[in-house]
Image 1 (cartoon, rainbow, N blue to C red):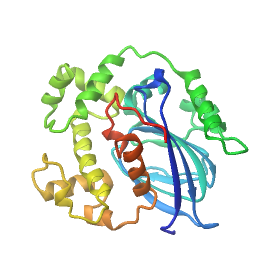
Image 2 (image 1 turned 60 degrees about the horizontal axis):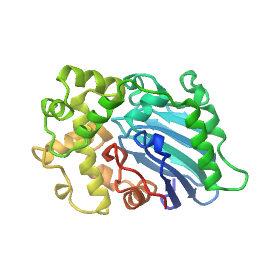
Image 3 (image 1 turned 135 degrees about the vertical axis):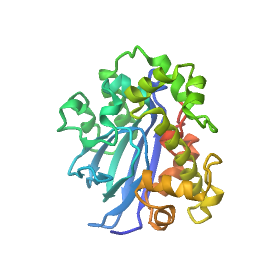
Image 4 (image 1 turned 180 degrees about the vertical axis):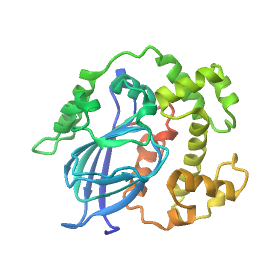
Length: 296
């Protein structure tokens, strides 16, 4: 594996009708030396659709089955890291907020937690097949983005609990939320209703979602600082001590913070920095439901 790569990222604002559905729609151009591949580790995130034209990824979420030779991959909401390798390629990615998963996938998110598959071969995602063919013979961002949007519009559908999903999501991303009871009160739901909405539409129970938010706030702050500072300066105030954060890092990333910081992150560091600049948020799970990406 090589560590050096050239990456160009462009974010696109979703059409108004999808304003609360996507973390981002983006195009990536990744270039490495001929025959080479780079390796990186994706952090916990929401569901994603990714289409590739060029070298295809080899990816694995924790100890789940590896996915390879897929030009169109789908992942569900995750609480574990996704190790992948990739060569030179052009990629389109669609990050699905919980409301987007509900409107487009229309299946309980908890059934696809920490899930990844070849979307063209998995029977639950056959409706998404046109997304695999969005690429132009001549690279054309606008034409390809138009095909992405057309494919998504063709499968969109209403969601009865849309307002509850928005309320839960807005409550969840607020810093300082320390308990499920506080989470429920902020969302305007009973703890029992919150549990049901979170499992069905967010993929995890409320307690795990709060833990993931706290961890990702800390991890994103550390990486945007260059990844070479002290973890103690980045960890969230809700952690009781450094050991508490270390245990959480093992749970979510499968390794300790020192080990993770020592790994090369040729793709993720570039992507997070550009995402923070263009979108205002470095990581999917930190997006607020009403925030929008800006075109670059």
